[in-house]
Amino acid sequence: MIRHAAYITLAVALAGCAAGTGPQIAATLGPDPALSGGSYSTGGGLTVAADLREFEGRTLVCGVWAQSDQQAILTKGKARGVVATGSIAVDGQTVFRGLSFMNEVPPRADYAGQEAGCALTDRPWQAGDAQAEIRIPRQVVHVEIDEQGGFSITFKQDGPGAGGA
Image (cartoon, rainbow, N blue to C red; front, side):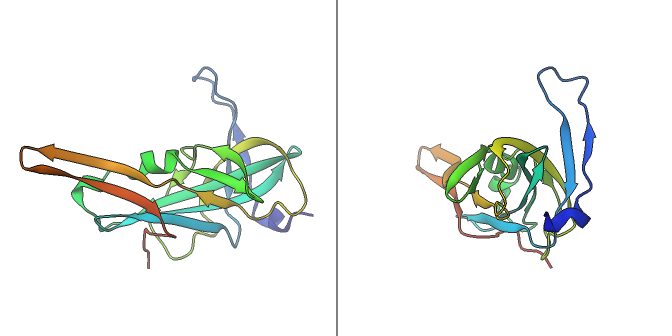
């Protein structure tokens, strides 16, 4: 029995224009999505919220992401690329790579009820697959080198970093 059944409003719309794309699925996040994210070495960061649920016998990953309002100018516009490198694991096993299907939302304290983008995995749904593990690799998001030297800005996963009221 799915606990989030009351919160699931799946809308399937076929993407008729883009070749090679499957159905686009959206859902409302449940009351307790998994949260993670990280921060940039210059301050600011991002948060990813994700739910797992059953759809047509397979595991469906749904989620949103937010970036902090306060951050260095050199990290503005980098969050989408950072999120795209993320993955979702269940019981330590990666079930989906690339979180660019997720919707961007404003930063907030609670992501429950947000309209999420979803992706259908190949993993058969198993009772107990209720909690997603969000993984975002440490990465360099900006490098600047000139005649006086250089510096880089990194992102590291250290928990929700977008802030929010």
